Length: 246
Image (cartoon, rainbow, N blue to C red; front, side, top):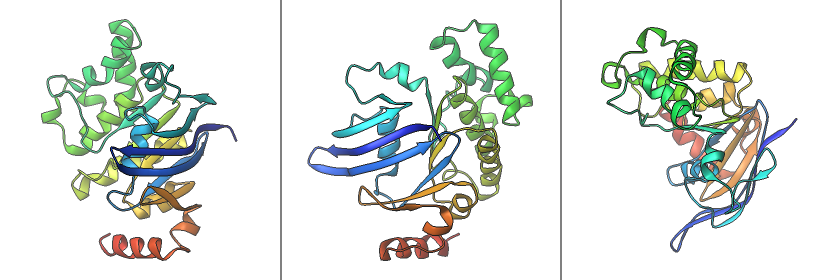
């Protein structure tokens, strides 16, 4: 299978504090990799490094074989190939759902307004929000806002989709609709790296689960192995704590 993403020996320090201590990760085309681990384990920092929102201290990240950590790389061009969704939606409150989704294709992709809006309507329909195109974020539920954010992340037809705890800010009854959408994206062949605390969902959808602990990949493998038969005491302790609250 073709590797879309290769992370090799990535370290990230904030001042004197090491947060990532040498991460290795390979993500094949059309697969879903779930990052699990406690708060402060490095999941969000790793996603921010992949999207070049943070500059790595050491190591190499390759997207389709290109070293995107090379300082000569145009970060904006790289980000056009990577969709990212954060837990807090980050929608523009003064723009309708349609404008939120069509903005990047217009401004970054230089699409004509009519073409960008046509594409945005297709994406909103794809995430089940065709009837909410003209609604502003404050008129959308949390689940609808998050689905709009996912539509926006898909607007430039990315090679890779990064999802950072996209259900953690949602009311429990709204989590399912977002998880169902992620399942549909996987079925359509999207390559996804997602940080999540939804262990049942990770078991169901992920091809590979990576347990991050103190800035390293402490355990990695198929979900039935990592979640069903963990080998390290740290992972067993983490799972017992998390599963108690599910």
